Length: 223
Image (cartoon, rainbow, N blue to C red; front, side):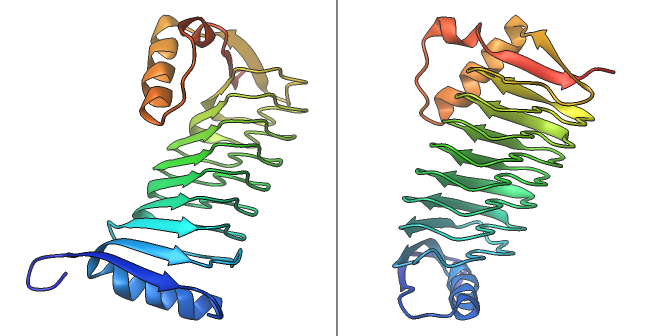
């Protein structure tokens, strides 16, 4: 912010930059610009870690582990893939990954939205306390492990032990569920659930038939 006004776009070429240098540059320039474009990210780890500015980040390529970890406020868009723990402990903002992600996508988030358009690894949304995680493809074992709150929405299939030791929050799965974990039960979705799912998914560009919303499986704590 300069003189009360923010500036437009700023391009950062991450080629050859160390991770710490890249993050320092992102945090500094985010103070003065509405949008940062990061070219040549080369799957670097910890990109946008701890970023608290209300700024749009476009990453042209793939990111490594812990993209957006502990972020509060930025809207991060990745055109490629991401590694493990995308959006880890995010408290506010948005992380959209056009490709795939590794294990632990949305781990521990308190708020905001993490979206992976493709498949993810295991333990998606583990220990999440709030916010929303949306997976456009499949998710691996122990999806929703120790979940404490929020919404976890899977459009593809999930493998073993979904909702293992879930305490609070809700997991919605459109595809097949191989098995449920301890303390997890499957319920019918309500009309309110279906309307909310449609509102959320439509807002993020997921186009489902009306009948699909009635086919979501709802997984919660058995209480």
